[in-house]
Amino acid sequence: MSLALLQSALLLPAEALVKRCLALDPLSATRLAPFEGRTLEIHCTRPELRLFISVRNSTLHLSPVHGGVADSRLSGNADKLLALLRRGSQPHSLHGSGVTLEGSTTLVAGLRDALLRMDVDWGYHLSRLIGDLPSAALERAAEASAAALTRGRQRLHEDVVDYLATERHLVLQRHEAQPFHDRLHALQLRLDRLQARLELLENRD
Amino acid sequence: MNDSNPQQNQTTHFGYRQVPVTEKASLVGGVFHSVARKYDLMNDVVSLGTHRLIKRFTVELSAVRPGHQVLDLAGGTGDFSLLFAPLVGPSGGVVLADINESMVRVGRDRIIDAGSPGNIAFSLANAEALPFADQSFDCLCIAYGLRNVTDKDAALRSMYRTCKVGGRVLILEFSTPRSPLLGKAYDLYSRLWPLAGKAVLNDAASYRYLVESIRMHPDQETLKGMVLAAGFQRCECIDIMGGICAIHVGYRDQD
Image (cartoon, rainbow over the protein chains, first blue to last red):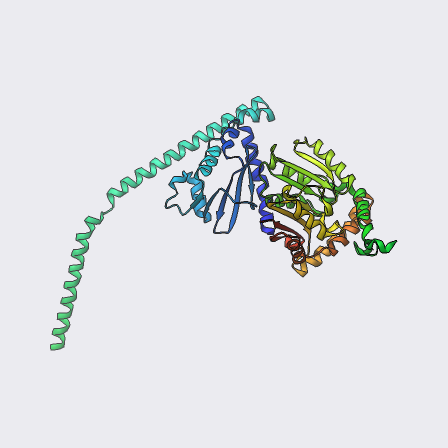
């Protein structure tokens, strides 16, 4: 149980960050309101870890333990859960993902929706901390970087698709390779037979 | 005269000392009157801040929901009440109860200073004879308080009486480390507490009592037996930090 206590300590800053972000989004409380008092359990089977996400007072509470029964439970190994997180899949597309969902799908969808649609006016909050001019410059730089990153990713994706499409045409297809393989096999058989006859003739002498 | 009151002939432990049963409450009261003012600071010092984490962890085991009634017994300076209050919401309630007036005063002031959520009530109450109706609370919590109670069995029975069916009691208390090595290290560390008490509060005696009372407190299995003997149908024991502390969760599943 000391591990759970350590997890609890590690979750504190994460929870503080989530709460802070949710507090900066004026619509998060409305999105979370229908799930007040409900709990989602995320059970990582390998390594064995549990995380409970509860909706309390219109914000999220993270904990490694929960005294009651969770309303929903997502379970799978760390790889599968992380893949799900990266993919941002909807709960109805969990089939074949290696993650199982028990209980309310509405809660999972609602929490995902609240987190993904979080719309925080970072510029405004940053300007209150460091002033209007630096925050505007930072905001522009961040937007430019994000746009460049998005363009870069898109271009990389297109390049990879083009490359694979071109290479695909150059590579011998299975239906083209099969007759060649068959002829090669027949030749191999004839050679074997020829070899056998030669050995037979040599032995007769 | 003494024969007419058998309690006066009985003794109990106050730290390592044996004292008459009737005197223990006032002696413990003296300790907490002395430390009330800087109780939280000293908790931070001796636990190296981990008590906050342990309290939060304990509350997670409570399964308290909006509308629930919670008794924070031996509630002291109100740490648990402040954690429970947002969970029960405006439709529920928390009662901070303590036998020591100084602790209740400090707790009440602290809760008001923290912007009282309005659902916390205060009660000067003896855990052995709780002044509440039967089955009043969904959850009862006593943290670092049971070892100071003179008659622990009576306190547990009283908690059982006031616990609703389906409710639970949480007992957070110092306990016995499972590993002898950890026990030795903890023993050495706890010898520093009176020195810390002397430095911060100019009161070494109170923290000497704290160390002694921890040593005299029943171990995990004994306390589990006591919880079950009080009437709770199930009891789980959760070791914290290798058994330095333990949380006993007693469930009242039926009448």
